[in-house]
Image (cartoon, rainbow, N blue to C red; front, side):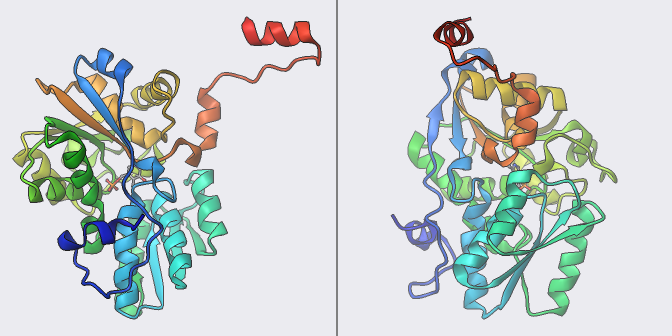
Length: 337
Ligand SMILES: *Cc1c(COP(=O)(O)O)cnc(C)c1O
């Protein structure tokens, strides 16, 4: 299978013959969620972006950003990240044979993402500051050095990520009334809206932020964003205006969900739908359950990343392991009770 640049080349800024750095990203599952549909009172589909090569949707943008970096002759790629961009940057840099460097907020990134960035051989810099500060610093760094910045302020990221909207339109034959999506730095909602518009689809864009990191809901940056959903712990989204435009011109909205609502949706998806996403991803479903989707008949919730990224939060939420003597009786009791 070719990656998404090959599949959608006619809609992406890459000519035949341009270098392509791919791990066969995209073409992720879109599954009907019967129990969630019942609870939400509308037909709900889940777009499983955790099925991408490094476990999050960031790979869609990264194949384009890193391919463009190679085309431009860059020797290194750098990003600021709450975790998944770091994992994806590190993997695609390794694939391309480029140096990768990632700046993450110290102590604030999920274990799996850190393991990925380190395993792929990236320089991992833990900043004594938050994501917004990290982003300001890498922007400056990329201005002064011949390094490609691969955060979602990079246009190629948005171009790659819009392909998720193409896949949804193709799979549902454009029959879709609303899209629920978590919003952090606001690149992804911008990308989906661009993708839908290119194909003439206009689902309502419903963006959800964590209550402790909800600048778009408040209408002002948040100096010290806090939430269990580390991937959306962002106080000053880079794509602020574009995200607001996507929501207002589609007749959508931006709303906040509490950490409690996020964790409840996270557990519900795992137990009742068999889908293990990360906490930030569950904000889309938490938002749908808390705020509804108006009169939408068919809704897609984007599950942005894989649950294995953040085993700590999972173990804090899940039930305990049952210890047992190596005897049939004891095992029977342990299994059936
Ligand atoms: C990056 C990320 C988000 C937020 O996407 P933005 O483009 O920053 O709004 C949400 N969930 C996960 C798992 C992510 O990695």
